[in-house]
Image 1: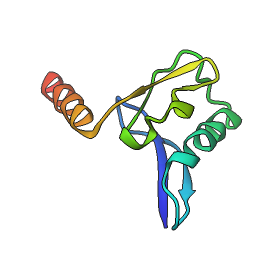
Image 2: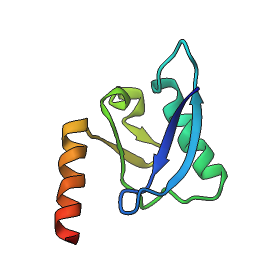
Image 3: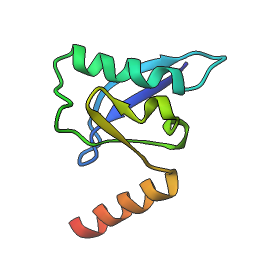
Image 4: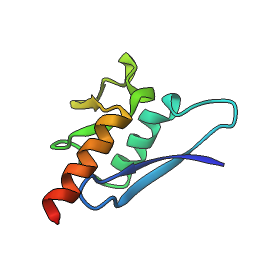
Amino acid sequence: MRLLAAATHGDALVLGQVEVGAKSNEIPQFAPLLDTLTAAGIDLAHTVITADALCRHRHNASYGDVPVMPMCWPEALLAAMSRSLRSA
């Protein structure tokens, strides 16, 4: 089983996840994952959403009024390293 998860940037808290089909990828599950967050009462109105390279497609460039910032893995790794250096 493969899962697509939404997590907070600061403390890596998983907010929700959806299953990704064996013959698919996470692109079709991106909006449904965000739907589960809003259905659970999580307000995304003042949220910055980042997604890896597979979620960069135009249909995922926003979710309602919330912009989605594409982030490739090298960028995500650098951001994580930067956070850990600041907290050290």
